Image (cartoon, rainbow, N blue to C red; front, side, top):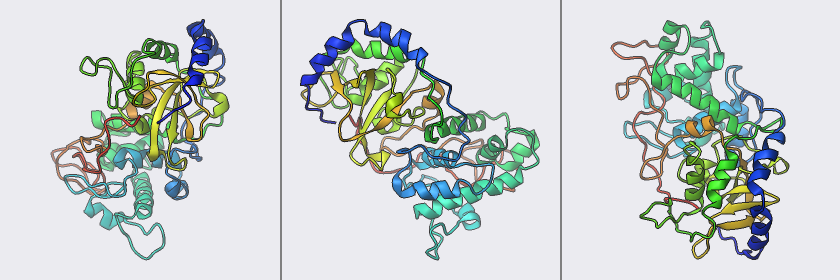
Length: 382
C-alpha cells in the first residue's frame, strides 16, 4: 500500500516513542473487556467472506444445527481459499474440493440454475453444507460435541468417529477439528469486546526496533535482505518474535484471529487495507496498530518503516492475532494456492461417507491430500 502522508509520521513518533511500551503493557489488558464468545454463532463477521458468497454461506451454513456459517466459511477457506477454480493433483475440484464420486452423491444446485456444477461456487457452497449435514446424521448417536464429530467425520470418515465414540485419535483429524473450530472464530461476528492478546506489547517492541529500516518488497528481514522488510514480512517477524507463526502474505494474516471494530482497536492489532472493501482477497497492506489512530508499517518502495495514520480510504478492518488462530491457517504452495488439509490414510483412495476403512482409517472423498495448483501470488502483498 502506498501511504504518502509521511509528514504525520514524525508527529506519531514523538507521541508514541515516549513511554509507549508502558502504555501498551499497562493499559491494553485493562481495556480488553469480556472475552469473545465461542464461534458457533450464526453471523459472519463483516469483510471476512467475499461479498459475492456471503449470503450463500449464511444461508447454507444454517442447513442443520451441527454446522454454522462461520464453520462453513472456515472449511471453504481451508480447502481452497475461496477459489472456485481450485483443483488438486488427485482430482479434487472447486471451492469445496469435491472428488468426483462424492460430488455425484452430494452435488447440489445451490443457485437454482438447473445444473449441479462443481466449478460453480454457489453449487459448491451448498454441496459442502449438504455433505456436512449428511455426515451429521451418520454420527448423530456419537457422544460429545456434535460439531466436532461432524468435522472429524469430514476428515476421517464417519466410521472412524462411530468406532471411536468421538473424534478419533488421528493426528490429522484432531488437528483438522481444532483448526476449523479455531478459524471459525475469525469468521464470527463479535457480540462482545474481543479479548486482547498478551503478546501484543512485545510484537510492537520488535517492530519499533526496525523504525527507519528501508522497505524491500518480499523482504523478511534476513541477512540476504539486509534486514529489510515489506509490510507482511514485518508483521510476520514481529509476531514470530513472540512465538506466533503468521502466514507470509497480508490477506492470509487477516484470518489469524477475531476482528475488533474500529472503536475496539488496541495496540498490537493488525490493521489492513484492500482495494475492494467487499472482498478480503484484495487485501494488499498490513501494519501493527500502536494507538491514537496510528500504526507501525513498512509502507512502500522508497520509504522506511515508520508510523502512519490508519484512517484512510482503503482501510478494511483489523485482526487481533491469537496463537490458535494463527496455527489454524492453511499453507500455500509455490503457486500461491491453498494446500488442502491432510487426512488419515493420505494418499490412499477415498471412500464414501458411509463406508468404513480397510487397512487405513476411512477418509471422505471431499478434499484432496495433494497440494492444489492455482493462480500465483507475490511473495508479499505489502
